[in-house]
Amino acid sequence: MSVVIRCENLVRIFTSAGVEVVALSGLDLLVSDGEFVAVVGASGSGKSTLLRILSGLDRPSAGSAHVAGHDLIAMGRRERLRFRRETVGFLYQQAADNLLPYLSVADNVATPMHLAGARSAQVRTRVADLLDLVGLADHADRRPAALSGGQQQRAGLAVALANSPTVLLADEPTGELDTATAEEVFAALRTVNAHLGTTVVVVTHDPGVSEQVGRTVGIRDGRTSSEVLRRTEIDHEGRSELVAEEYAVLDRAGRLQLPRDFTRALDLRDRVRLDLRPDHIGVWPGRTTASPETSETPETPETPEERTP
Ligand SMILES: Nc1ncnc2c1ncn2[C@@H]1O[C@H](COP(=O)(O)OP(=O)(O)OP(=O)(O)O)[C@@H](O)[C@H]1O
Image 1: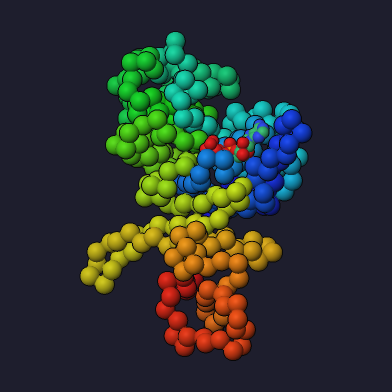
Image 2 (image 1 turned 135 degrees about the horizontal axis):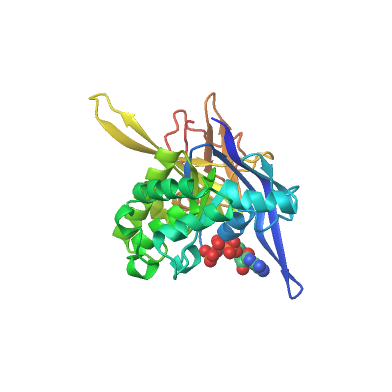
């Protein structure tokens, strides 16, 4: 499957009042065509900065970023405008940022198409198709204020998809919604992902969304740290079960960030002991007094931090 988003060693440093803030500190991210990925991290971890760069609103200080064949650093003004209009769609947390309050839902969805020069007949068909897809066919004539929070986000989703973007970027799209309504919005995002093939990247502080998406990428201190991949497996009795596997990102320099709950569980810190096996690497709490040669190496290590890829 082809790669749609490729970020390598992305750095973004802000300077305000003479103080430098490192928002992204060498972030790597690969997203394949048609994937549904959540980037999850605490407040201040760099999520919004990453999305602003991916949507062409901001430029990184260093590193490289490509989205759907566009080089986000080399891109000139004209290409950037076209990229923002045609290649990426954006869904914000607040309905007010996605929808114009004085237009009906249908006119909100039609506006980006008219701006891109689409013909009226074409616009009408696409508006109807999109509202059908997000389950708002019966609400086309309503103003945003007459919709529930979940309906407003689904209307915003239809607006973001108006010009058939390759990638949909969503910044905390369910941040203001209760759990049931958030699930409804994620269901609409999954429908869009499955039916239109749009690659979807959601950023959020909520680790709970990992159950709603195909892959979760953790972001910590401006770098991608761990990943959880979910896939369906058929067990020996023919039942399908959802399997979640945890991954960590290994960068080109060989650096690996272990998930915090793993390091805490085994009190791993400062220095850890490594053991190369034919198909995996074992990691043990380091001992300060014994060297790796003299310390015991379990013959059949079964500690939870060991993963066979
Ligand atoms: N324009 C800016 N000027 C100065 N510092 C900034 C700017 N934008 C972001 N930062 C800083 O960069 C860091 C990352 O911010 P960012 O908004 O990307 O994080 P976030 O994970 O999206 O957080 P939140 O969930 O709170 O929005 C923070 O320390 C933030 O204060």
